[in-house]
Structure formats: structure tokens, C-alpha cells
Image 1 (tube, rainbow over the protein chains, first blue to last red):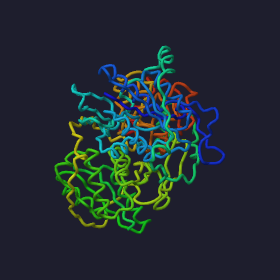
Image 2: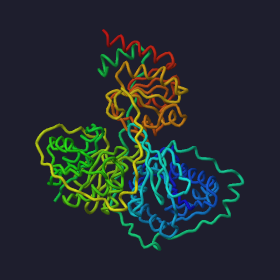
Image 3: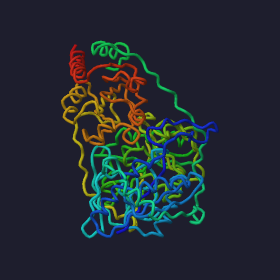
Image 4: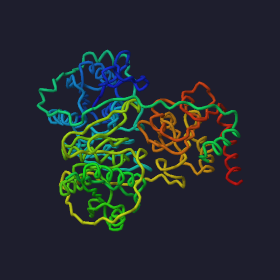
Length: 251
Length: 322
């Protein structure tokens, strides 16, 4: 089978984010860039299926500037077979991302698309669901377990929902988006890194796909939220209970 | 025009508080746009829920039938998109619960709509505030064209109160072949007598400092029960397998804003702060006095949690019985 996995280049989660002077984005100097953590989980899931199902090909796709090559190479070093970079100088919003991905799906015809449930930069949590709709495919978002049927025609997916776990059955092709507990992603091995250099990484300019990527969501401004300032230390549990009861009046 | 369609999520025949937040946000948006607020109640055998929704002063469209017996994204998208078209809705709104997050982007894609997710503020009928980069940036975004799709953060708006009487209309929707592929298998609900995490007025969360899952049971649960609090956890504790992910408070978990938040053995990574920093009063208990959580806590106690938490539990019990 063929599995397509999406990869987004994002600032390392530990990065201290500052708004740039022009107010249109964030300061990018000295930012360490990584694969969106949920996409790493998505790659890992695809690789685990590949290890179980002989003849599986794992194809990575990213949309972004040429620098996203770095994250795709990391994914290839983890064990993916090849990668596609849709080159776009401008950041594009989830619906446009989904339209671009739908084109790639049309070309690649995967049996399964695995994505991270959300990117930790814009925190939209939209692209997977939107892609499923554009393709008319079922979706199983926030997955914590994916069990492929023996005939590889469907998947039973456990989903992390409010108040518990939900299980759905989806016929393939389908979209699965990865939640935190789906797996523990592997690190790229040294031989993996060596091999990754020779793997195919195809670039496609976004304009060549003929997709409408015009924004419908306009960023008016970016602001730093007011800082919450620390209060004081209390010396004992007794003092804590006293202040919570008498001063804060919350217990 | 200017009508707003509210997706009225329900569970076990009731509207959770998060749905009442969607009612409030939807009515506010309808007011700003000079339109009507209409609620879509989708399900099977939901007459009573439709009647109840109308008591919030909104007109109700009930989509009732076997394909909607359980929430599934594809069939519900068909229902919501169809009602949105019939009602000439410019805006479709729901709360960013697990269902809202799963459903609304799909609806937006079907309608070709711009979408703002998890918004924390409504500036006008088309302009919203939302957080990005783990809550480090507040973005003001404007949605261009119609329709627009908006999911609202459950803790950022007040819940609607009952008042007024809307109409109830039944609309039948037959989902197409592409809308009925997902098959619901089961919902394994976490049984708990404690309040729901996103609705509780007190939340006690544990972090890696608790060391293992048993210690959540031994130390944190008695404190939660003494306070009538919901239990939460940091991502580190979830990652380490101490507790299930539905307890996770943070950027990629649940966002809470209770009256009192007690962080136990949590260092205070930005991803965690993104999920709780709007709490009214924050208490941190941590043995490391340099832990970043103290920088945002109203009251900090530098102590060994394995001593302090049982002591706190006892003190709270004494106070409640006084």
C-alpha cells in the first residue's frame, strides 16, 4: 500500500516566540526549526505500517519554503521512501493547504493519508478534516490507535475525544490525524541519515498545481498577550489554605 | 441574511456547558450581523433536545434520523452544511470541543468558507481573536467572504441562560454515499464522579513530579475529592503514561479557566501554561523553587508534594467541616 504523510516545518516547541517588528509574523532569527511534533508521530505510524505490510511505500509531503527540505530529509532519515516539497514562499491557510494536498493525493493516489492533528505554530487543527472533505474520504482525527484490517481495505481507529475514547471503522482510502499517544517516534539512525541523502526529494512550485490558495483569513494584527505576573510564596500548607479561604475566597 | 447557525452538540440527552457557550457566542454574532440565531440539533430521537434548545431564544432546526444516531464527521457535515444553506447562514459556529474541532473544518471545506478556530474573542461579525504559537501570540483575524466558520473556545465566553422561545422546525437530510462511510463502533467513556475538566470551578493537575500513575490515585485524587475538583495533568505526565490523554491540560490538550487551579509537581512548560493561564487563581506546589510555574502562580508553595498534598487534603477537609 501507499501512505502519504504530511510534514510541516515549525519552530521548536521550546522556542521563545517574539513578534517581529513589522507585526506580520514572528522573529525567525535563532529559531530552531523542527518537524511539527504531531507530524513526527504521523511519520512513525506510517513506518510501523510499512514494517508490517510488505511493499508499503511511505511518501512525505510538505508545503513551504525551500528550507522545509531539512524537515523532509529528517523524515526520510527516519525511514520514509521519498518526499515531495510544494514550494510556496507565502504561508498558506488550512483550506489552501488542503486544496494543495488534494492535488498531490490526486497524483499519488495513496491508500491512506496520515497527518498530525494540529501544527503547533498556528494551532488551527483544520487541514486534515478539510482534506478529507475535499476528497470525499472518511476521517479519523485525534487517533491514539490505528489497526489496519488484514485485507488492508479498512482501519479501526481509536480516537481521543472528550470524556473517553471513541472507536470508528473507516474504509480506505481515509485520512487519519495523529494525537499524542499514538506512538513514540523513533530517532533517525546514522545509516538512515546517510541513506536519506540519496532518496528522492521532488520540488513542485505551488503555482504549477493550479490551486486557489488566495487567503480568506486575513491577519489584522498580532499582539503579545498580557503577562501574568507571579504572586508570592507561602511558607506552609496551613498558610496556603488560609489565603485561599480568606484572601482569594476560592475554597 | 446575517443569520448564524449554531451547532448544538449534545451528550446523553443533555447540552453540556460548552454548548451553552456556543449559544451565547452565536447569539452575540447574530446581534452584531443583524441576523437571526438558528441552532442545529442533529441526532436520532432528539425532540426533547430541540425543544430545550428553543428555550435559549433561538430558532431550532432539528435533523433527526438513523444516520445521525452517533456523531460521525461525514454524516454530520452533510446535515450542518445543508441546514446552513437552507437557512442562509453567513456564519456557522460551534464550541471547539473534540466534536467541534473534528466537524467544523469539514463543514468549512464543504462550503468553501474561511475558518477561524478556537477563537477567544469576537471583535465584530467578521473579526475574531485567536491564540497562536502555544498562546504566545494573540492574532486578530478577519474572515473574508461568506459563509464563515468559527469555533469558539469554551472557557472564553459565558454560557447562555434560558430565555425567550424559538420555533422548532424539522428538516430531513439524506447524507450522500461519501457521507456515510465512517462507522461508529463504540465510545468507551471514562467514568468519573468528579466534575468535567472543562467545566469545573476547581482543577488540580499533576505533573511528572508525581512520578507514576499510582501516585495520582494516592495523592492527587483525595485532594480533588476534598475540594470537589476535576483532575488534570501535564503533557509530561500523559507522555509518561501516568494518566489518560483526556486529562491533559495544555496547548494540545484541554484549555481550562477555573476559579482555582492547583498545579502539583508541574514545572510549567509553555505548552502547559497555554492551557491554564486564564485561571482566576493559580497555586503551584513544587519542590524546585526555580520552576517556571512559580512565575505565573498567585500562590506558590515550595515543598515536597508527597508531604504537602496529603497535608493540604487534610486541611481542606477540616475547613469544609468547620
